[in-house]
Length: 149
Image (cartoon, rainbow, N blue to C red; front, top):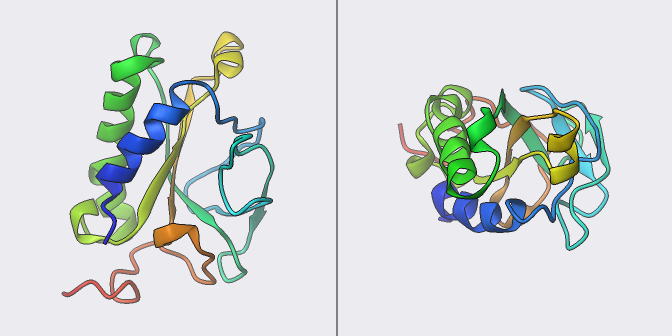
């Protein structure tokens, strides 16, 4: 099982460098997203399509929040995302704490250009282990994920 905490730390190293862009799309909790390249690639996550969660999708949004002015880079960004994406928001959405879930976390913080325009929104998304596709929502679906009761 790949722990979400491990994934968030690895991804934030890339994200904090400004290499991943959200491309100006607005996402909300419960949105299921199909990406052009099954997730963020070397050029970043720049094009997504919101689909019904019963259709094949790569990511599912479970939480959206704004960064404080002192949380936009470095360790402060990592801490803000870890706290907001791996705490109660994760447990409330999935139905189990992240350390009991096989799901991977892919946080999408704003790029430097977005921050310069005043966009401080971070989108917390989940995906299947290894980045596969899914044809059902992840919301409170611990049973379908094989998590013991």
